Length: 236
Image (cartoon, rainbow, N blue to C red; front, side, top):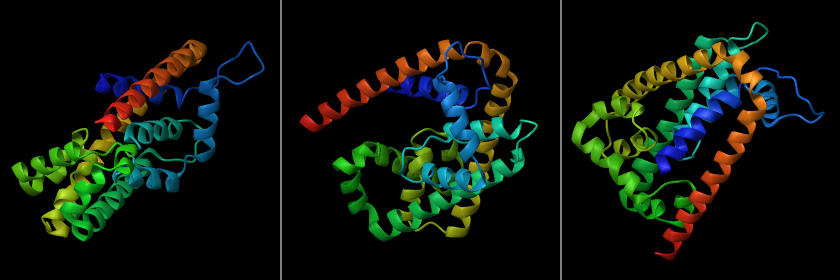
């Protein structure tokens, strides 16, 4: 259920965060239009780098909400963004976030402290858990250094694989290379999503009101789901 909700959220976010201008029967802006305006005003290379750094660390910022919208904006004729630079700065941001995980969380804090933090209330608020951290560590132990490359394409593992790399004191040059290449290829995949969404701009504009209603419904369901799960975990 959780994976389904997250998939729906990400899919809808790619669409509504980048929708073209749509005519509205009322004076108020639609949800799509408001988010589109925010992205258009705030999306730049610094924002992309910062958001992808957060995404590659322990903060719950999905890369699907960063790269595709940025590429969508870059494809507009009046945009100041370049698609290739979006991918480059997004990849640099991912490397920065992963490096923080590697040194600060993996090497400095260490395994015992990180597992304790992962199972704390703050850790849970960041969608972190001992189970997720263990999954990433098991993956690293099974596949070794190459896991920091392959792991960039795997949900959950992508966010935390740099932590067990720090636990094991993996050679940093190898870590940085694998991370940069893996993150770059993953961002290319996300860029394609932005490209295809841009091709559907007319349809998005035509059904902006219906999409807005659907997004609100999905967000409400997601919030309810995570609240119920949080309450259950708290009782345990």
